[in-house]
Structures are given as C-alpha cells and as structure tokens.
Image 1 (cartoon, rainbow, N blue to C red):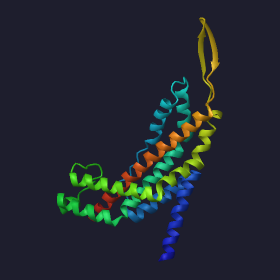
Image 2: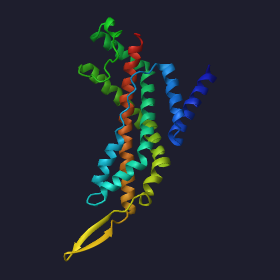
Image 3: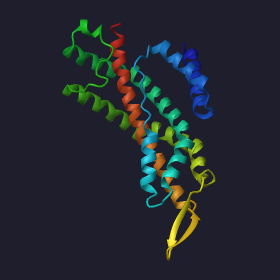
Image 4: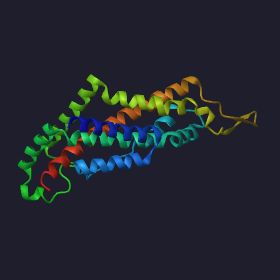
Amino acid sequence: MVLAKVEHWQIYNGLRYNFLYNGDINSIHILLNLYDLETKMTNISPKYICTKKIRRRVKKLLFPRKDRQLISNNITMLIHEDIDRLELTLYLEGYKNGYYNNKWVNILEDKTIKHCSIDKLYEKSYLFHYDTSIDEIKKLKEKIWREIDKKNRESGYLTDFITTYCEKVIKGKIYNLNMNIDKQLKIEYNFNKPNIKEESYLSTKEIRDLYTMIVNVITKSTINLYKEASWFGINDRVLNRYL
C-alpha cells in the first residue's frame, strides 16, 4: 500500500513537471483523468487572470514611454502560455488540497445541514462555491484561506513553487526582452522639423523592475487562485457524499 502511494506521488509529479516545464499537453490530460477517477472533480473552472493584470501593470510601470503598449503586448505574447500552465496547475493542486481536507469538509458539511435539507443536497450541483451570503459560511471560507496563508508563510510551499517556476521559465524571456521587441519609430519635432528615431531599448533597471512586478503579480494571483480552488474542492467533496 505504501509503495502504491509513492508510485502515485511520483506519477503525479512527473506529469505535472512535464506539463509545466515541457509544455506537454498530454500530461495534463492524463493528470485530469487521474484526478477525475479518484475525486470525481466536477466544478473545475480556473480563472486565467494573471496575463490581464500584467498587461495593465506593464503599461503603468513603463509610463511615460511611448512604446509601453508595444512592450506590454510582447510580454503577453511571450509568457501567457507559461502563466496559463502555472495557473491551471496550482488550481488543480488547490482543488485537490481542499477535496482531501477532511477537517474542513466535515465542518462545512455540518454547517450545510443547518441551512439545507438532505433532500435538497441530493439535487444540488453547487453548494457554497460562489454564494457566501450566509455569515457563518463566509467566516468559514475566510478561516480556511487564513490557514492556507499561514501554512505558506511558515513553509513557503506555494511561494517557493511559484518563484522557482518563474526563475526557470519566465525570467530568461523577460531579461532578453530587448531581443524580442520590434522597435517602434517615434517622431519628435525640433524647430518644426521632424526628427524620426527609434524608441530606446529597455534599461537594465526597467527590465529588473518588470520581472519583479511580474513575479509579484503571478504570486499573489495564483495563491488566491489556489485558495479559491481549495474552497471549491471542499464544497464538491461535501456534495459528492450525497451522490
């Protein structure tokens, strides 16, 4: 039995690594199938939000450069697939963390029964996935999120995973950004005479600031995604007890 658990752990990590670092789409499909067989995941809905946030932050960070829109577009094109893979991976990890967390599943089930009849539970596809209008459910969700934050502060298991991925996959693309940007011509007028020249390359400081900002956005967004997915996993586990 212990050997079987070790083999499962190795299989999951191998599939996750191949998907994250090698872009192997088949690996994530196999992983999703394995998760579906074991946990009957039904409400999988990751929100790919990092890229939009980064696009806005790039334009703000590079103001008043005239080519900040161009640079923002190039960054998005270069790293959006890498970020999407990370978001999906952490969503699945968060979901699995919640689904198998019997402590919180049992607590949510007890609170659910106070507000919902058993008969209605058998008919539901969603529980409190999106609805936290009941005060004690809202407080429970906040408590679960605080526990995840506390564990991450103490062990760094999420932050380290994210920053390591950014170092290995994203950093090189950002630090070589000048090689991937099509220079934009700008026209300046000096004594009513046009002076046409290219926008300057990004400075070392600008590139360093861009990378720091991108890592910060990715870290904050994907940790929140992990927490949201954990909440979904807990809710689904309660519902699956009444299938």
